[in-house]
Length: 211
Image (tube, rainbow, N blue to C red; front, side, top):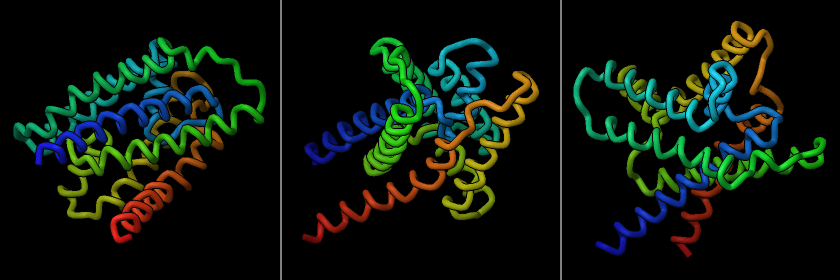
């Protein structure tokens, strides 16, 4: 039992780091980020702060909205506040401390592979964190609360959430920056393949267990 719990903790920590790395790589590729990252990245441009700080602010807002919706204290939601700060720190750690954002990428030949790697890391990170079954990242926690409140499937609400993030990003860009930012081919690829990759990872694990 202890070994299983330890495995889940390690899996969760690795998944959190892989997801943060994917977030940073999206920003490095500069071909458009995932819907999850689009609002924080645009916010970072508007208020002139780091992507990690902007992600933390965005996640805190999502946690507060969850608490307003449920109208009661829920530890699983409050713990997302801690995760918001940890995740934001990790994004800046990989981007600034490790220095990934300072690596020059010249043209599509270098940016496309980085963006594809970002998609892979995002899918793998989400998959690992879901398998570990601990605290959800605030974005997924928000979707979960909405799906329970409206009695709708999580997948359906997740699609609506992702679409709304893209719309909000476009509006924020046009209003405050006077141009659309953070949305591009990378965003489209993320929408098309992150979910499919997560399903593929689940299929591989299930087949491995049955073997």
